[in-house]
Length: 129
Image (spheres, rainbow, N blue to C red):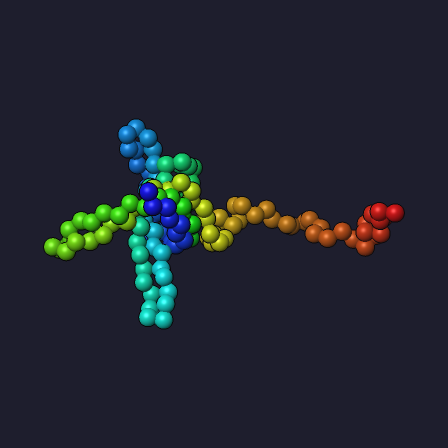
């Protein structure tokens, strides 16, 4: 078994599938290695079986870190052998805080009519001695 850790972005929204009566999430992600010779993108198919609750959050462009085992296969495409890299993920975590404005409004409470810092008098009355 080959273990791998990858950080990259989803190329499309994740999908839920059923395989052997067990639900799993599948998605494609791209990890790009940058060098002085240029960018070298590598695409991976990811299969994740442990958390179907993540499905609504795995949308195109989301940055994720994936840990799991790598399976490399080859198939013929236009009479050329083409590699297929599949990661059977044991852990998927989100990288960064990329959210759209609507999601931020839903998750961050509004601070209207709330005093963010205590007044000078409250600070003086709250002395530990």
